[in-house]
Length: 226
Image (cartoon, rainbow, N blue to C red; front, side, top):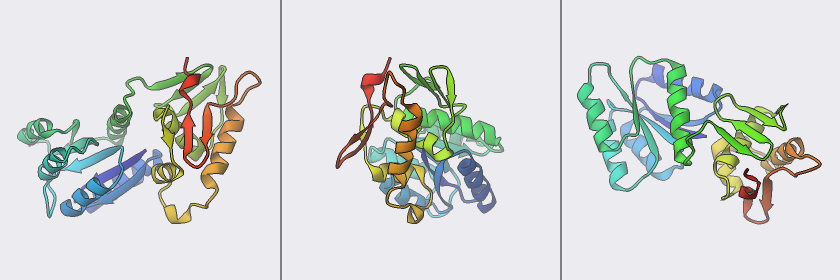
């Protein structure tokens, strides 16, 4: 999943960026409101984490302008403990959730994970197809009651495709949402990872649910849903 963090405190921004990357997210970050607004408008993010007090353009203005332009990205507002009015204003302007500073990394991750699921219309923490269970909270994959050992990026690709099940997902979309440094992505890295995922999820009775649409991308086949 790909996040945008707009937070002017360099120390907090770097800490949150490190923690969220360790949790498996791809994240872009800035401390400037105007730059953050431009990134939010032009980028493809699953969730935006937005502070209210920002230089250049404050968070409430960013939120208001994004909603005026019908930007549907889920937004988590960061608010100060004593600013109840900011929380109310944020929710009324179109924020999806808020978090009061100071907060724990565990709570931030839980709220971000929930918003990312909502971005794809998923309310449960598990995605299940016949014999296959993907636990979005624990990041565990079970096939026919056996734990499947996936590399971290293999899991993230499977998670992303399964959350967009039934849609054709291009290679560039996968690269953008899974890899932090696109300059280091080799031409066949996605193809190799998907080949490995298929091998681990295939059985004698049923092939893996990830299909190739030649010239288009990949699809998590809805026909395999139970």
